[in-house]
Length: 134
Image 1 (cartoon, rainbow, N blue to C red):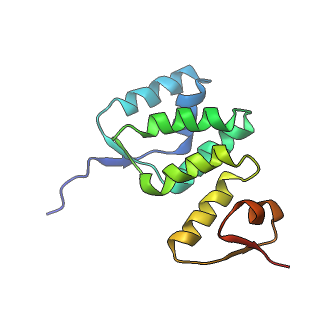
Image 2: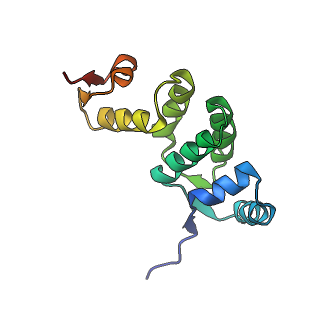
């Protein structure tokens, strides 16, 4: 017998409305969802998209990570904490690297890759795994 799951998923626009507080009715709906007691799965793509959009909306890297990770620290959010916590730190630490580059490098390391070949000089200079392909 399959029991109904208490886990649901949440899209990036729900986080964005809550964090940016730009559409009050949607902010309230997001808040209500977050207070519902339901566990919410947050995919890697959702995390990347929230950070990309907030950065595009001119929030500082530090502000994005402080606010978003504070929200994600609630145990109701199910995501790969062990994977993302060092990426959040590096995103603030290395301002010339994109969040996506950091995710790519971390996934490569996680899969045992010794090298991640790139044409991106900044990436190669600031990542242990990324190497410049001449």
